[in-house]
Length: 120
Image (cartoon, rainbow, N blue to C red):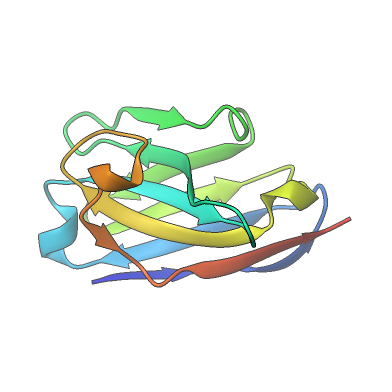
């Protein structure tokens, strides 16, 4: 129901745009979020966008570098990632949920993840 794409290998300072295609059921009334998980670390919140008013919030580590957006006509959420750093390397997951939150338990549906690797 959630399918991510757009991951890959990029040099530090570069950019990538992740996409997440959702079904109508998991997109239309939900907050959409992005999380990431690096090897040996817990899954962490990256960004979220609320359905009702397109409000957004970000983890401090990505503020000013990443931008989340949603296209309601396409049931798709994006994560534009600029000025990438090696510490951004992780598997990135798309999620949808009813709460405009930053905890994994706020989200009900998850994608399979897409790998982002930033080389130094």
